[in-house]
Length: 123
Image 1 (cartoon, rainbow, N blue to C red):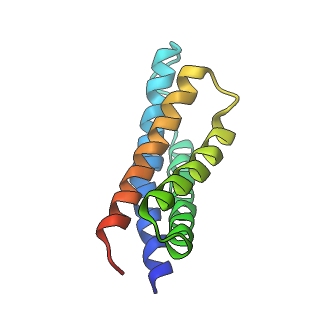
Image 2: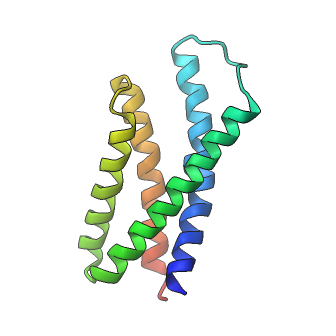
């Protein structure tokens, strides 16, 4: 039952932070690179939001596993953040450094929210 809760939490936070936030961040990057601002497609938006939700779901799974096997909160947080940020880096390492840092920071926002939820939830 706890796994299901963490998958749902991860997916919901991923939908909002990684999905919607990621799509908004993509618009910011387009603006920074002087690309047209109104080239939004429904298909592209749904793809990014879906990808953010799935990434959040996997983040929830990783948090569940670290929570289950690592009982020291500081160690659990460290391992969770390192694993997830390495996965994020793998996804954005081909981008420009500033863009890479922005997406890594967005992922960190997601990770902080999930870790905070984990510290407050006693299931």
